[in-house]
Image (tube, rainbow, N blue to C red; front, side, top):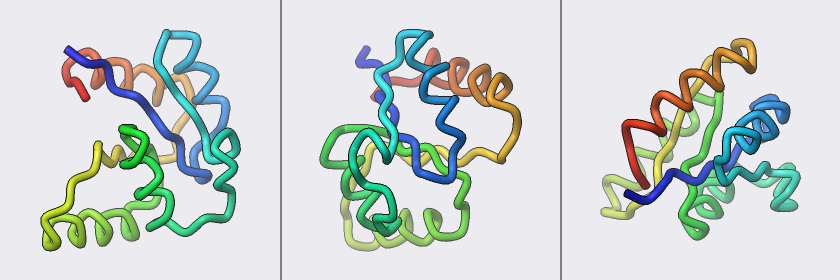
Length: 103
């Protein structure tokens, strides 16, 4: 089973990246990727090109992008939408998710 690799959109607390890394997850941020201020479409394209599930709090834009991918029969590696909740709780939920799914 291939582990999920994460890419954090810039609206997600960067402390989550460090927490995920400390648990052994391959994780990068928009800052790491030098993609600060890139459009949501560019962020999703980058995550797809790099075989990463994107983590975001931006429900509406990424729901629209997901629908576009579906209608164009394109694939991405996942869009994980999270509320802006404490990092520890987000980490717990993502760890649980990653243990149940693979890339």
